[in-house]
Amino acid sequence: MTKRHLEPVLWLLFSGGGVVAAVFLPILVVLFGLAIPLGLVQPDYNHLHAVVSHWLTRLVLLGLLVLMLFHSAHRFRFTLYDGLQLRRFATPIAVLCYGGALVGSLAALLIVLTV
Amino acid sequence: MSAPITYRQPVSRLWWLRKRTYFLFVLRELSSIFVAWFAVFLMIMVVAIGRGEASYQNFLNWAASPVVIVINVVALAFLILHTVTWFVLTPQAMVVRVGGRRVLAVKEVYVAGRWVPAATVVRVGGRLPASAVIASQYAGLIVVSAFIAWLVL
Image (cartoon, rainbow over all chains, first blue to last red; front, side, top):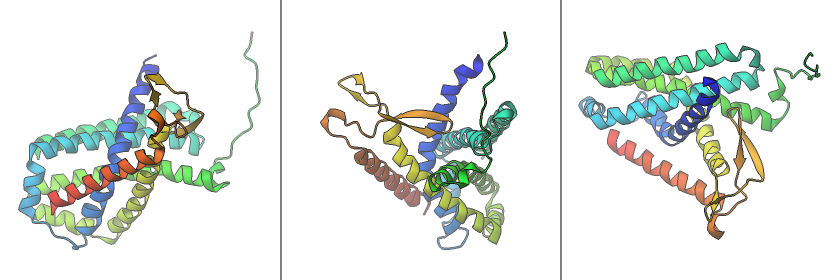
């Protein structure tokens, strides 16, 4: 019963997360995943700290992280169902996927509040 | 009264290797792993930045290690696949209304376990082809990317 009501919400989170992942992630991976670690660009630490400490950055970051985690959980759940034909294990898979997203979201909240 | 027994042909676990389109579909869905990976990566980075300059330097050393760089190169490829396929899907999954009435789609597309109405063939108010929706999304991508690069650098 609750599952039926939850499904549209989960799909909404999935599509919201899909949009933010599509728009924000490529540049974030290029910058923070590759260019900065490889030393191609070197932003000043104090500047980065100031950007991350700003309340607006933290709020946006929290929104992005939560949406991306639930997007990922929802899509991965169906990848396991359809890709590996694991529909038999639907309940444990759903619990693991959304549980993971929930734990990640709480971690994100904690990080954003304490940074 | 027992439920009727219907025969279901078992589907191979490797069904997605049979056709190029199936394989691309599974690759597209697997991008989800890298979305989660980079969410975690960003969290680790933010914690490191918050803890001070030495901690940030440690993070950079870890992020520059070959394994992490390789993961991020693969992640970038998957995320570009996600972006491109997502932008193509958006106009398809949009509910198109013409004069306040919902237009029924002719075909459907399969995304994350759900068939959604595909509205690519429908034009709103005479002319809003899917390409316009796709182009505006790329414009959004460029604006957001430029803003983030400006903010960080």
